[in-house]
Every structure is written in C-alpha cells, then in structure tokens.
Image (cartoon, rainbow, N blue to C red):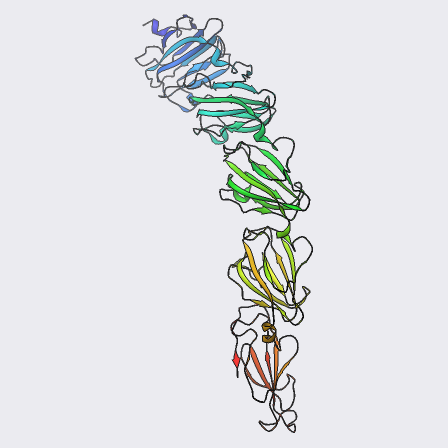
Length: 605
C-alpha cells in the first residue's frame, strides 16, 4: 500500500526510469483518499521530452476543478507554467513537456472520492516539438512535405504555443493543403487556434484564424513566406491537423500583391481569381487593369462565378470600375453564386478589385476578356447618333441581346426624308421597372416628338412588355435611354422606318386642323387606325358641308356649343352666325396628360 502513496507523504516523488512505466493516483483502482496532496516529478534524459498517456481517469468534477484536481506543469515543479488542470470522467488528451521535465500535483478535499487515474509515462525524442519549444521552426525543403500538430494523430497537449515558418525559393509561393483538421471549436477561435500569417512572422497580415472540425480551404502566401502559430488552452484538446506544404509558381497571384496587374493583349484572353479552380485565399486584395487598344472598348464575359454571398457584398466581392483605377465610376459590386451579366463600357479602360475576408472562401471566378469595336456604343459616348437611312433599319440598346450596362446615357435621333414620318416598331423590350414606383424612375426609354428633348414626349417606357409602335408627327424623333446603378436587363431591339402612310394617318395631328369637305363624304379614322393610336396625340379635324344640305352655322373655333364628349374625342357645333350658308363642325381628338395605354381608336363615316 505504501507504494501507491509515493509522492503523497510530503515529499515529491521522481519518475526517471529510462524505459518509462505506469503511475497511478493513491489507492488506485480503489478510491483515492480524502485530503490527498501528492506531487510527482517526471525527469527525461537529455534531448528527450516527457509524454503522459492517460489510460483511466475519474476524478470528482467541479467548476474550474476547484475541489479535487490533477494539475500538470511544464517544468520541474509547481513554479513552472501550468499546462492543464484536470478533473471529471473523460480521458484527457496526452500531455507532453517542451523540455526534459514535467510536474504533477494531485489534491482532494473531504467530500466524496472516486477511483482516480492511471497514466503511462514515457520519454520520447523531442522532434514532435519542433516549433513548440520557444523557437520558430522553419520548413524550406524545395520538394515540400508533411507537417502536423504535436503528436498527431493523438490529441495535442494543453497550453502549447507553436510557431512554424515556411520559406519558399525565390519566385515561388507557399501552398498549404489541409489533409486533416480537428481543433477545439470556439467562438472567434478564442480557445485553441491555428493562425496563418502572410509573411515571415506574426507581424505579417493575418490570412486566417482556424479552428473547428471542417477541413479549411487551402492557404497561399502572397510572396515567399508564410507563418503559422498554433496555441491551445487548458481545456479540451483534439487530434489537431496534418498539412501538406509545397512551393508553387507565383503566377496565380498576378495583381494580388502590391502592384496592379494590367491585361492589354489585343487578342484578349482568360483571367481568374487567385488559385482558381481551387478556393481563393482569405484576406486577398487583388487589382487588375484592362486596357483596350485605341478605338476599342473592354468587354468581360463571366464563365464561372462563385464568391461568398453577403448583404451588399460586404464580405468577399469583385468590384467593377468604368475606368483605369478605383477612382472611376463604380459599375457593379458582385458576389454570390450566379453568373453575372457581361460587363462593357464605352471606355478603353476597366478596373477590377477583388477582396476576401477571413471567413469562408469559394472557387472564385473565371473571366474571358475581349477588346471590341465601339460600334455597339453609338449614341452612348456623349455624342448624339443619327439614323437617317431612307431604307430604315434595326437599332438596339447597348450590348443587346446581353444586358445593357449600368449608368448608361444614350441619345439617338431619327430623321426621315421630307414628307415622311418616323415609325418605331418594338421587336424586343426588357427594361428595369418597379411595380411600386411609377414613372419609370429607374431605367427608361424616352421618346420625343421632334428634334429636341424638350419637344412633346411621346412615351417614357420601361418594363417587360412590348410597347406600342411610336410615330412622329413630323420628320424628326429623338430617343434617350438612361439606366441607373441597379439591375440591368437585355434592353430593346427596334425596327425603324420612314413611311408615307403614317403621315396620311396623322392628318390633323401635326399642329394644323385638317378640313374634310368632300361633297360625297367619306371615312376618317383616329391616327394609325386600325393600329393603336399613339400616346399624347392632339388631333383636330374640321368638317365643312355644302350649302343647303344642313342648317347654317359658322365658326371654326373651339368655343362653340359642346355636342358630345367621351374620354378621347370632343365634337363642337358653332352657332355664332346663322346667316352663313354652310354647316361647320370641329372635332378635337384630345391628348391625355401622361403617357398611358392606347387602343385602336375609331372609324367614322
């Protein structure tokens, strides 16, 4: 029985058997006594460390182990750093010293006791402690290799502080691939953690702070150096991690260092997020400038896109600027897992800025960039474009059938030959609208009946339905298109023509009253009948009957007696001068106060 009480009689007992052995709590496997106070010192040979493996553990549990407890110190006595204070019924993780000494102190109070513990101790080579002995360990093998947490695949010990430096050959970068990862989970990794720094020491920028049970994304340095620090507290421990490290070419990081990378190959090409198709690294900050040849514009086509989604893209994001740097107008801030629409502007320059935070990362993006002729931007470069081909033709929104760009402002003028009018027929129409906001306050196509934008407006159009045909009252029509910084759509495709028939159908709608005085009578219609009459029409017709056929009235003004009215047409009869030998009626086709839906109108004999 005396053997089981070694170290519990007031003196510290030392274990130094080179072959190791078994040690237990007093009286094991019976319950340890009350008010025990036992001290044990483990002394390893020079160049070795102490390794304790718990075979059994059952010590009365209490908050912070304030009643019965086994305390482990990383040194020769109780003045050394405490590695762990243990109690409860779970087998603790292995305990390993950082040098040749370890000290255990077991105490119990006067309450209930349990069977205690049984420990196998051994003295092992110190190699598993590389980087955990107060010195940073450097990995610089050009062929790469495997590194692990302490005593992997067994649980890492408590209260460790390990530092490793990875140094790649010149012109290469460090690549860490996690093969296994099992570190105590905690909020913000405040307990045990593996922290990755982009540099040679802890003064580099932090790339990631890792814990939990999921395999982390690969980690890449921005230059030749990467630094890891692993710490554990005095609570639970896990098996830790196993990492394959290699030194790779630095090409995937173009634009992600201190300098912006420029793409200016006239033939275009492919560019990707760093390490695509692998997950992009945490805390990336990449800048790319696309410079098109003179007279051409930049166009980006997204082939793949997978960037962490967040509200307003506040975590990871790809931001597109319509210019040579981030001081230009921002066109889009992109994130999520859907393919964005093509990006194109009427400029020779485009600038991209990609950032990621320290949380989740994804495969990123692959983009085909091209430099195209500026023709799709006619009218959107600050100068009005005129369509005056007598044969007519097709015109579209910029980049149709792809989505028009954000913040567009385009101006087109249509000029018909003398005696003809402009006719616009919509073949496709898809422009942003908001069912809760009227007047097309986001994106809109504005059509003016004349040469100037202050002429009468025929329509302010948005939405996803084909609009009615638009016809000018004279030779000229002006069209403006504006888009904001929100959603964009495929836009529109319009067939334009210069017609005679529409001019006839618009008699009386061009600012002059049209007179019908054929003695035989005839038919007259609303403008464009049987097609829908145009918006904002204002038409006036005067009917003059031969003498003797009707009662005699005079006047051609609108101040006569109102005969009949409905929503669109008003008829007036004038009785100012009954002595005149003819009957006159004036009919006015009244325009509405704002563009609305139009219908087929009327036909009159």
